[in-house]
Every structure is written in C-alpha cells, then in structure tokens.
Length: 264
Image (cartoon, rainbow, N blue to C red; front, side, top):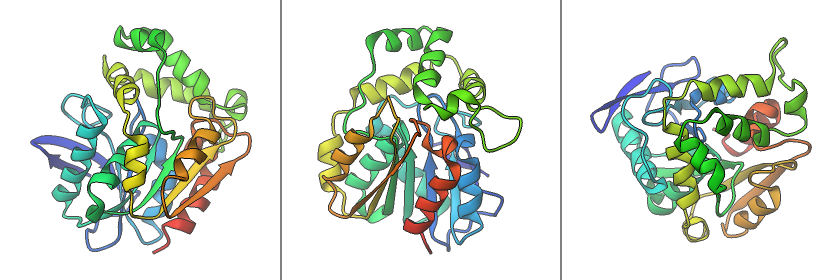
C-alpha cells in the first residue's frame, strides 16, 4: 500500500489484506536502519485475524520517500499524520527498539489516537556508543556488523531462522545494507538523544505489552521491566535465549504475545 503523508509517498505492508479503516488498526514500527520486512510474519497473522495492518517504512527507509526524521518526537508526530492519511481514528502501535520509543512517545502525547501499545526490545534510554555513532555517520560497514552482531542472541548466531535455508545474521546484514547512506546514523542519533522515556511512560493511559529478550545485550530485559513499572496497565513477557531482534528470533512467540493483547 502506498499513501501520501506530509507530501511524501509512504509504503506500508498490509499483511496480504486490503487496509480497511473501519476495522481495528495496528501500526508496526521498525527499528533503526530497518524497514517493514522485519514484521513479515506478525503483519500477516494480524491481517488475517481481524486487524487492518500497516507495517510501515518510516520516512527515508525501505520504499518510503523523503529524508529520515531526526528525532523521536518528530517521528511520533509523523505516526499521527499517517493515521490521518489512512483515515484511522486510532490504532494499536507495535514498535521494536527505535520503533518502540516512537510508539511510546506517540501514546504519551496523543492518547486519544492510541488504543494499545506493544513494545519490543525497549528501555527507558537507549544510549549509543560514540564509536558506533561515528561509524554509522560515516556509513562505515562496521556499524552494521556491530548492530547485527550485538542485536542477535545465541540462536541468531547459529542460523536461527524458522524458514528453512535462511539465517538471521546474514539476513539482518543484507537488510541494513539496503538502507540509504546516512539513515542508520540518523536513527541511532535519534535513539541516543531521546531522554523522555520515563516521562512518556508515566503519561501512557492505554494498556501496554512488553515483549523482551532474556539475552538482549542492547536493551536488557531488566531495563524493559523497569520501564514497564512506570505504566499503570502493563504486562511483561520475557522470552528465554532471545536477543534484541525479538520478532525475527522468536516470531511465533511474538505472535502469541501480540494475539493475546491485540485480540479483536
């Protein structure tokens, strides 16, 4: 599906079903340097179980036009503009890593537009090492290796894909290599600069699900649990032996957790 948001063409995968604004909507928001393809299995399941799905490519990512937005606040504003563009009064927001910060910020400032949250691989703050920031700003291939290497848990480093013949680390590497020059650097800078996690969580009024990897080295499960305590109606699911790339390392368990919370 292609839609115009703030004058730019935006691509969103709808899970194999036409987007219907009359049905309960869910927006799936990818992480830094990635695109809608990380949600392939979850988007299809939700689209065939009562939800209208938008697994979106953020500006400057994947098939979407424009330049990447430089702050989590701007991206939250953009999510609301996306809902306006497709005629959705409100939606559940599912976000991973940077996408989780975007979903959290959106829910904190636009409560009437957010039905529920599901946050994967998230923490109150997401500081990025200066060397990684510098490498990403220079489009150094080492930045991709660092993100993909640290982003996957033990299973991801020994194949790990539920699809025969595929492997998670090489697949993640190819995904991030497709990103346009500068995109990863902008995204990591936005994550590094975001400081409203605790404040935003305290302002959330909708139910929130946290799906965390027990082996996550980028946003440890302990940090995700601490953030969940700041939201009045929150539930935490911790997946054993899973790293930061929760939805690709444990796609079925992620679907089970989302289905229980986003039942229509």
